[in-house]
Image (cartoon, rainbow, N blue to C red; front, side, top):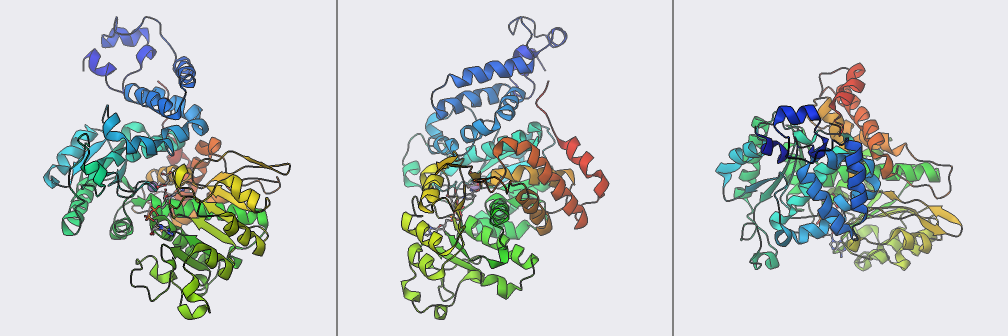
Length: 540
Ligand SMILES: NC(=O)c1ccc[n+]([C@@H]2O[C@H](COP(=O)([O-])OP(=O)(O)OC[C@H]3O[C@@H](n4cnc5c(N)ncnc54)[C@H](O)[C@@H]3O)[C@@H](O)[C@H]2O)c1
Ligand SMILES: O=C(O)C[C@H](O)C(=O)O
Ligand SMILES: [Mn+2]
């Protein structure tokens, strides 16, 4: 490899960090400024320059340049300032770059672009993307359900790139072992189809057999090329996400973030909240506002936990009320998804069944103790919804977790005020602490980013053949225990600033569960070492 290839390769480039000896050996003399800098000096300068940028968007562009030039330096800066930079590198700023991707496009950022029109190119494209690297982690999206902003065609590739950045910063997954992938199967967003600058396939989304076969071919090719890979699915549409997961979850090491990751983090948050309120999960009544991919995924996780805590399936089901566009979901509704069906209620349970078409009437009638929003309906948790909940329960658990910021069901600040400081709140995007009547309330972030890095680290370290339910449950429990129950206004989840620390906790718990479950051939006393040895650190 010649010197210029080294400087142009973000995995190899150290910029001014090349030592004198390296410069002599690699032919770099004269190609970088004379002074040799340590990565700490480079990181401090980079951070200083970053802080001169005014908007989050400018900061993101700047950081993406660093990412494209020098991966090690990028992750040094990101890891050092993880709490500050998460919302810039990832959600919510990433939503802006996805909506404007084609217009702002500069570089492919190491992603692999697969076109539904060219199934025969899957293997070549993946090989080109890997370029001989040993790929252990793939994030793939078809971008039909990006966050709560919907179908963004090929532009959703940024979510695959962004999720992988968080994996490395949070859990130390080696950035040279990851591969972001987007499946471009068209888009149903007319404004993209009409946009002359749109960079994706200019046709409607392909569905049915052709789509399913493409997914199958993709999975088979991935498994052949990268037999040890952990395959993460992100932001597929409601009609595909659960189907795909169910098709592969017992065969390969695979994970759907919106279903399983969100299920884990919300269960952890609820366990944290119950630790604060001193209550039992099996005494709670749960309303899911929005019962799509995430909503139903969370319900299933909490339902499984209730069974783990001793309830029968029939008893456990009685604790859930799912609300979607049509209102409370009833069993005689023919439009229910397979994931909604088990939790639909009977009309004859309610004297006023026909009135239960909006959230407020459901809250009044059901009097829940937990309300989780995954509806993408901005402001749906109104003052009357929140105060109605607070009227019936001392410490209502209220998690408005739709993303990005513009789609939140309520702000943490409003929920606390409207419940007179009694609600236990977590939000999907980071929220500033709320001051109310002399107490500072820290707000937990119920975002799957707090858990998917550790989950993968543990699973990959244990070389688990599948991601089993007990591994998922172990992840939720390992996080749920880390709250400060004595401090007034304590958050229900651990702070993002400690993400690297608790990713390790999650990883160890997950790897141990894999071994107990018989899906890993390692032994428990190896776990600490296995996890430690997987961990990549941003140093030269
Ligand atoms: N915080 C997190 O970690 C996290 C994780 C996953 C998803 N989410 C967020 O959850 C939201 C939903 O994501 P998803 O993947 O489940 O999408 P989805 O499309 O699968 O589900 C959304 C559901 O909301 C329903 N809905 C739409 N309008 C409604 C209304 N007026 N009233 C009631 N229900 C309504 C839809 O019918 C659908 O069932 C998004 O905003 C996403 O960002 C957050
Ligand atoms: O990406 C996020 O911030 C969480 C989640 O996966 C989502 O789709 O909203
Ligand atoms: Mn998602």
